[in-house]
Length: 201
Ligand SMILES: C[S@@+](CC[C@H](N)C(=O)[O-])C[C@H]1O[C@@H](n2cnc3c(N)ncnc32)[C@H](O)[C@@H]1O
Image (cartoon, rainbow, N blue to C red; front, side):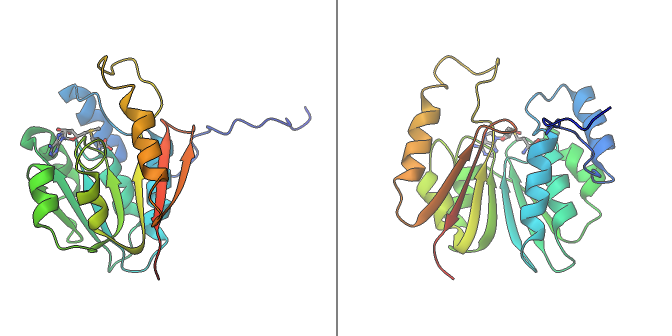
């Protein structure tokens, strides 16, 4: 058979992190229905791997699906802070990833965390809770180092969105694009990805 001109670009031969299967199983058992999908995970892993000793922040640990991918990309000197308001879901991540000294699990409300964290402290921010994305955007971006990258997913329509959510998405994207300090890419890929690089070094 001849090679297709249109290869399946969603193939999942991505060499997933070792802990991913266990976390996915526990996520299903718990009934947590907001996990990041593998394409997003693979992108996050590549971004975490792109900078030596990267300082990474995740807002919204959930059960640790993206946490697991981010950790897999970090080098030995990297650091990952992941913030979650719900200790029950975060405990799933702690069980499989808590052994790793590069990760700091923070049980906190994201707004409080952002307002207390040092400015410019992170090279990569995965904003995966409502605060830091649809509210308190300035707070989240103030934590991003010059040259750092801010990423969000879930910008494409999803069946379980509340009725008032869809209109917020284009407002968020336009808000991001209007910021002169950011170079913004929006991709209708994975669950809908926006990636922004803050100008600087
Ligand atoms: C989309 S899920 C995160 C999924 C996870 N990052 C993953 O990749 O599978 C959003 C998470 O944010 C948490 N969350 C919602 N509001 C929050 C807040 N104000 N502060 C901290 N966490 C919050 C929720 O409990 C939920 O676990």
